[in-house]
Amino acid sequence: MTKERLSLFDTTLRDGNQTQGVQFSASEKVQIAQILDQIGLDYIEAGWPGANPTDTEFFAQPPVTKAKMTAFGMTKRAGRSAENDDVLAVVMNANTAAVCLVGKTHDFHVKTALGISLEENIENISQSFKHIAANNREAIFDAEHFFDGYKANPDYALQAIHAAFDAGTRWIALCDTNGGTLPSEISDIVQQVIASGIPGSHVAIHTHNDTENAVAGSLAAIDAGARQVQGTLNGLGERCGNANLTSIIPTLLLKQRYRERFECGVSEENLHLLTLASRKLDDILNRVPNKHAAYVGASAFAHKSGLHASAILKDPSTYEHVDPALVGNTRIVPMSNQAGQSNLRKRLTEMGVEVSDKTALPRILERIKQAEEQGYSYDTAQASFELLARDELGLIPNFFEVKRYKVTVERRKNKYNQMVSLSEAMVVVKVGGKKMLSVSESMDADGSDRGPVNALSKALAKDLGPYSAILEDMHLVDFKVRITQGGTEAVTRVIIDSADGAGRLWSTVGVSPNIVDASFEALLDAINWKLIQEGAKA
Image 1 (cartoon, one colour):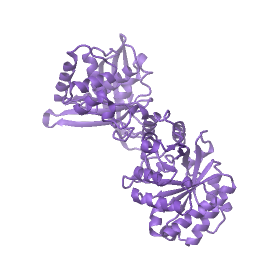
Image 2 (cartoon, helix red, strand yellow):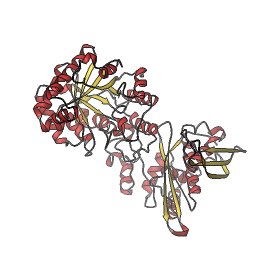
Image 3 (cartoon, helix red, strand yellow):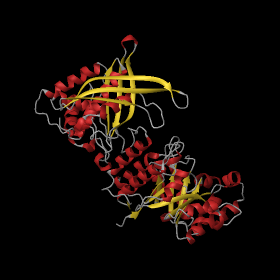
Image 4 (tube, helix red, strand yellow):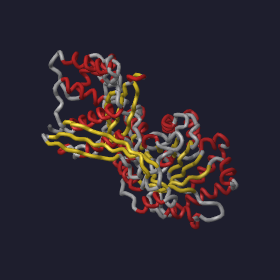
């Protein structure tokens, strides 16, 4: 059976850039484009040339990719020819292999937003795409508000997309712009579009996630005959986001319903890059990764229940729908004082530790129980659990010793005569018999203070002799504080999430009545875990 080809279109750099709080630089766009290309995306929609300095800079020297670099713009304006429309000219001058133009397909928007006649809008669409075809560019029509438009006036919505198709457009992207169309509706309407004379091999789907149905809607469109799916990494996008390609791609490659029927540019060999790509994007955006994200989340393959862990030990497919390694993720068996020996043995095996001493497992479980009574929690701090177990088994190298540390927070005026805080940390460590003193501030490039924990982290990793190079790509991504008991005897629990250049994400815990002490304990665990993973020698 010959498989059909599915086209994958990524718009992280354009539609994803419309996410509140997200603003890619040109260099960040290059990094992300290279990641997308490495995975195997067919199209990379990189932005709107001329719309802002960043996009203009990017298109002036875009990275060389196998994927078709795509410039975004809009159909020509009424009252001028396509050849003389300066906005359209800037998009064409980007010299990309493909051009995507947005146009109106909902009669309400034509009348209200554009303020032109329905006939003028059809003419603008037709002439714009004839112009693209005449310049030998692959054309994509972003049919804005198509599903809402079809439900309001199906004849006009179809007339608009046929105008683009008849003008030589390669892909007609049916957009659920407001994100309110349900999967069953998308399926019915896509079938009607194909029945109207536009082959499914020319139909694309572009959904938004305002009802948490963007992925489901995209799959429904594919089932109905669409052969291109558009979306973003991690579901970035305005409001509630776009269809999440980190969910769609592995579903297409790993689920029998799609795997047996389709092929796409992403190979199963490259699929393992998906988790790394997801976390790299969050790293660039300085965002905390969603632990519960399908396929790529740190908790996507976590098994806390003793019953589950026991079954997983016998056969992972008992409680996993796919092998986490296929998407570059890992299995986690969280540890707590409720854990059984099956959980513990499984987790130790994944750490690469085989336990021959029959008394070791009960000893480790007892230490977990005692620690959690003091306020520790290892459910979400797996790296600290690993260090606890290794310590009980005598398997932690003595990399360095902290002799003392100090943190100060100062309030002072900046160059704008505003009162700002500045955190400074001093740490004295002993490495290989030699004492070293490091001092660091937590000042950002923009002059803002990242806080005492950031200052401590920078100072601790600043001068650890032979270990400093190993720690260069390590950074903090999240910091959570919880008071485990109130009153004058309050105990503070700090959870720190760390990441590195290899895409690893790990969590550590510290507990103390003093928040700084708790933070420092978690930082020490984070660094020691990283050194062990890298095979550092004491």
